Amino acid sequence: MHKILHGAFLIANLSLLVMFASYAAGNPEQGKLKADACLGCHGIPSYTNVYPTFHVPKLGGQYGDYIATALQAYQTGGRSHPTMQAQAAKLSAEDMADIGAYFESLQ
Ligand code: HEC
Image 1: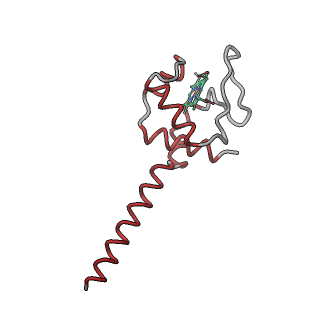
Image 2: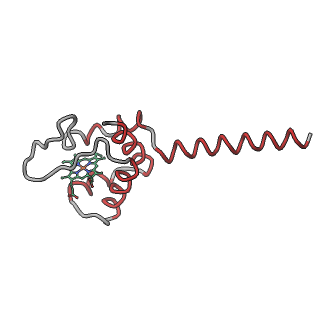
Image 3: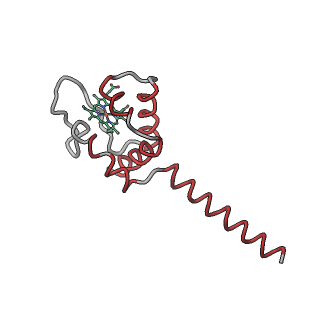
């Protein structure tokens, strides 16, 4: 009896871990939907800006963690750029992870 209970606990813990891992890594399917507004500037596949005034970094293929961290920095003011601060202001931590996962999935 004790062994069976222990096994059930182990399985519950493992599935929690898996859930946490997929949350932390972001969901590229969700990210694709959420990144729609970003593509006007971070255009894919050519990565050129309609506005030649400023350089828009290429996001496709960058690490998801890097993208999520950059977005967080714009949101909290750690990185200053008025355009991106406005973009990041609306995003939750989950949005950032999802968007990061989506861009990471592009090569
Ligand atoms: C109006 C144009 C515009 C839109 C829309 C836009 N961006 Fe940006 N983005 C920029 C520019 C310009 C920069 C460079 C800012 C800088 O130098 O810090 C940038 C920088 C970034 C960076 C940092 C990249 C790096 O290499 O450090 C990330 C990440 C990013 N944007 C993500 C997004 C996401 C996600 C969205 C959609 C929610 C988005 N952007 C929408 C123009 C835009």
